[in-house]
Amino acid sequence: GENVEQHPSTLSVQEGDSAVIKCTYSDSASNYFPWYKQELGKGPQLIIDIRSNVGEKKDQRIAVTLNKTAKHFSLHITETQPEDSAVYFCAASKDDKIIFGKGTRLHILP
Amino acid sequence: NAGVMQNPRHLVRRRGQEARLRCSPMKGHSHVYWYRQLPEEGLKFMVYLQKENIIDESGMPKERFSAEFPKEGPSILRIQQVVRGDSAAYFCASSPGQGSPLHFGNGTRLTVT
Image (tube, rainbow over all chains, first blue to last red):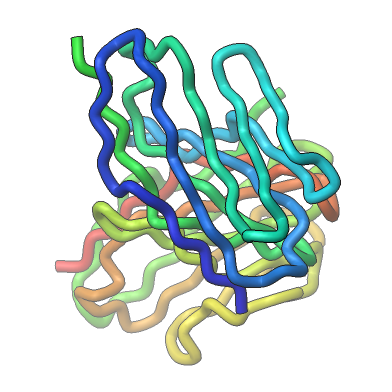
């Protein structure tokens, strides 16, 4: 079955700098790649997603890139702010079964 | 439009008791998923259901765990004869159909004493 690896597990960046989180997946048939943000005590919330027919997608300060050949996808957050501090999960999906990475805890330093 | 509702938020059970976790999907959503999250770990897929059908239960332990999504009412995740290792946060998510994003509830935190 699908396996999703996510790096790094923890990331600290200065406020205003950029943060990049990287994921790889194993099943070349996966065709949907969402990213979720989880704050303490809450459920994950979708922040951006990309499908396999697209290489890049941007929404304000957040962008996601997908390299299907290498089976890599990445989340980029620019101009980070304190409210970006959270745990971020990447995921890969085929046939509606969504498999998550183990998460990245992002700390935004003042 | 209410989101995915899970209850209870916190559940404490003694070893050997039964735990029943409920999930009401968003209005109009017919697909329900259950995930388990251990502290400092990711979300582990357990089961995917549509109304009255289990579509994929490959992540469910073979014993003691069961899930249902009846025609009427919430989806139920049932854990019989709980053990300490069942302590975790259990998240439910729903979607309107194939290829749609998942919307998560705020989870049920199960503690087995």
